[in-house]
Image (cartoon, rainbow, N blue to C red; front, side, top):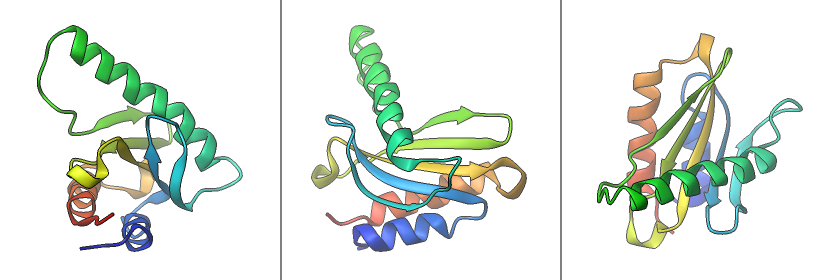
Length: 123
């Protein structure tokens, strides 16, 4: 089982990672961040992506779809933004946010690695 700091460090170890955060989507607050840059303010990105998660959850509810969200992918010209809700009982209401450089990452491998990190997270 990985702590929050270890999980964020592991997320930044994913090839092409630019920034990572664990976010509470009920409040939009970050529980922890790693990486980022002047161009990628993780606190702003976390708050904005909270709206994305909430909107998708409301849509699933309105459509009466009982499936959970595995992940949400936002594809930019130069980056991938990967949002993965935490599925453990202790992580309810949280999501991982991972920004990747498109030119330096393998999206399929990054998704797989983030899934493993999320599964090992202990809060």
